[in-house]
Image 1 (cartoon, rainbow, N blue to C red):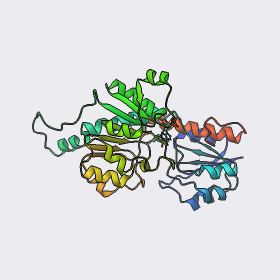
Image 2: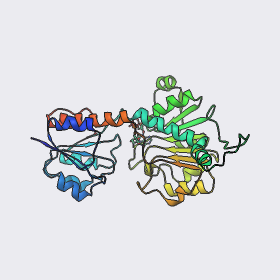
Image 3: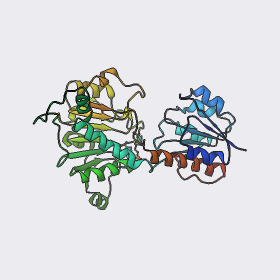
Image 4: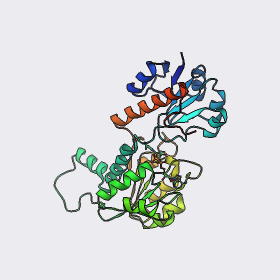
Length: 318
Ligand code: NAP
């Protein structure tokens, strides 16, 4: 019977599909395994289910003996050396689409949390400081009529654009390949090059994947192009932004604020960032709805089953 090794417990619905067909070993400890532990425990496995926190580099891939598929429990797959997998003929799959709405919702939630100062205001109430309604208590910029710049208008970026329109925002976008005029009109979005988008937008939301091209796409020079009233939202990947430069800009109040779900050296969150009141910090929960995480688990299982049955997996990356 084929064996599947799962590096960290995923929702039961997905595990059940696998357990009905295969011998399944799941790491049930509440910790991520080292590369050595993964290669050792997946040594006799035919399929490997991984999380973003698992670094599946060339060394790990070359050490795997029988694995035919690495099914990543995420849409991003920057934790896996795709080239090495391709060379070894190992299929890599991800979980696109099912987390689009959840992640777009979270980007908007962060934008509202930063602009309306939700976290600060909540602390204020809990600390017993709420004595009366006041005309200038916790003021922030409104969304209505403002320009949202979306960097990366794929699945999630598009879902954010649709939400932003409902809030009365003007949406501009930047991505590698410009949409057709028809698509732009349908979505009600306008294209801008990145620097123009950054310098003219009131709010900026990042939705590009992390690749060698997007590493520090938002660097110090580009942060300095932003308006002093700008808010930066990052639910993509931490290292798309030069985190050090962002922290300095937030300290100097060169931009108004930031909402972050992801960090450059995750899970490490710099103390300097934690000390700031103009930033809202979340622990990478973009796709964290019950429904989404269950759908992701089912997708992972379906990809594994397809490959182990000699079929084309629904969500092949390579
Ligand atoms: P997607 O549909 O593939 O969209 C990616 C977009 O980025 C596309 O519009 C693409 O443009 C653009 N892009 C890629 N490389 C670029 C570059 N070098 N310069 C400019 N634009 C570039 O992906 P998605 O499903 O929306 O997901 C986006 C990312 O969100 C994932 O890769 C993942 O890292 C992150 N994510 C985070 C969470 C979370 O929990 N916080 C959850 C889900 C996803 P073209 O079409 O022109 O190539």
